[in-house]
Amino acid sequence: MLAIPIVLGLVAIVLGIYVRRRAFADLRANLPASPLQILEKRLASGEISAEEYQYERYLLEKQK
Image 1 (cartoon, rainbow, N blue to C red):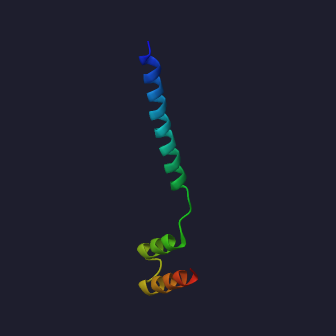
Image 2: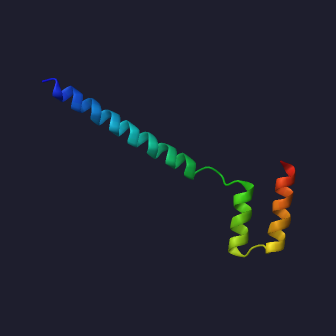
Image 3: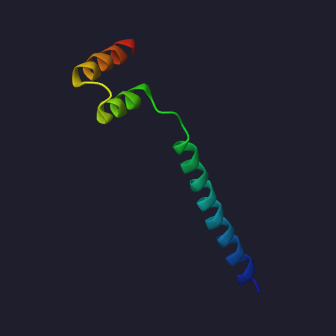
């Protein structure tokens, strides 16, 4: 008789952990990219040259 509430409690805990992790993963996926990440994507796509990337990165680091 006592086993049923214990099992249900454990299932609720595991389910709660799963839902929470899933919610945090969705939240992180929807966060905007940092300026450095955007700059790296632009370089990778060929939108900017390596020289432009280095200069822009220098400016970003200088602002810190």
